[in-house]
Length: 356
Length: 266
Image (tube, rainbow over all chains, first blue to last red; front, side):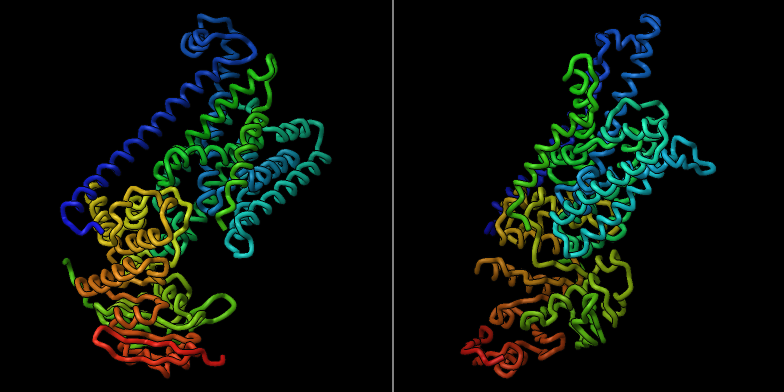
């Protein structure tokens, strides 16, 4: 082909330049997504049933004396935690989805579509109804912890199934749907036996909503994210290699069993914490990574952070929509994300015939 | 070029297979010499891919595989991957990575040497192998836009960038046209001669195996049916026994001329 040295040199330099250019472009996209998240966040805290213009919101955050105490309360204890929760939950679910899609080699995978969120809500419901507690564990952590245990069990099941040759990509999704039904039934059973007080808490999981965001919840979720993200990013190279086939990745020296196990731990922690605080919010973990992949490709050094940002962005915008769609009413945000997510899910299913 | 490897690969009493059935039982071969190009041939289900995967450490196996004095069985995948690279038959189709990214990813997946390299050096090394397999013009093309043959060349570039001492190729030319089949065979031979790399490849085309290998190992039912220089391993008797065909084989200056005449009853 290109056997003459001159031609070769040109191609090579062009490739080096093009690669550098591609890296810069991706960095720019990630930064751009970050900026968009900030804009969406600002939009989110300045919309709501009580009409407060952005200027007042700003004052409420930094100069509370300028506003009435109720206004300050709305901004500091309602809008700000909701908006932050939207960002954090979006980032957590989307990162979990991105890792799941790679680890299970399944473009339809996400905590919601494969039943991990349902498992987590069952775990959370169990903790509430039985009033579980452990010594040395603060009550705020008990519900997410139990959600995590249930989520992790479901992820281990999914992974065992994904590795057995019997189930193809669709088989895993069908199994996930079976998990959704199973855990929903179990949650319904818990509701049946639950006390009136516990019941009101449980109903909330039926539709994911940001209305239970509190500062202590936010802290727990932020701590989990901060603990998980560095490990995710450190395994980015290995995950990129895994996309090229398991044998190949192992032959490059990657311990796939270990990579899978640790990734599943992270996925469970992220999905469980998100679910414990906001209920099952569907499809963010599916939509976020796919948007990121379309923009940036599958170099996981970029795909993982970008997925977090797209997830946060979509979630934040969904939160805005949930406030303005029906004037005066606050829709559960899970309804909005499902309206966005279901068409994407169907599109992904219909687009896949050529791959076995 | 650079350092020339001088260790031979010794395979002694290797048994391997899958959970419910053993494919290879106590296989022993005379050592593969440094710089030797070895072809594994044999009918379907003879255990060729299984043997390669076991040598790469991808299948649980018993016995001894040594490179020089180093025992490879039981060492971590990461240490083994510094010496041995396996190129599977297929590269997934729908992966949103460019050829260059895939090759860089292969090198970075686990450090081949521990020294940190600059980005230019990493890209440069990747482009070296991409040029050598002849797809420099595709360096920035997405794997999902390549033909099967082009993906196979990208896959080869991934294996080469790791500069292994032992390169295991599973049907490296199955999707290639004649031009690239020859190009890859010439490249394989050149690498073995320059660096003393041991190359073990599964091939289906007997004429190509005969023309480009120093040594041919014929596997059948998990055991060695013949082993030696092409003219000694590919004989009418072996072909009749292993493939159930009648054939005439003539030695020629450019290799063996093999005429497959008819099938024998199974």
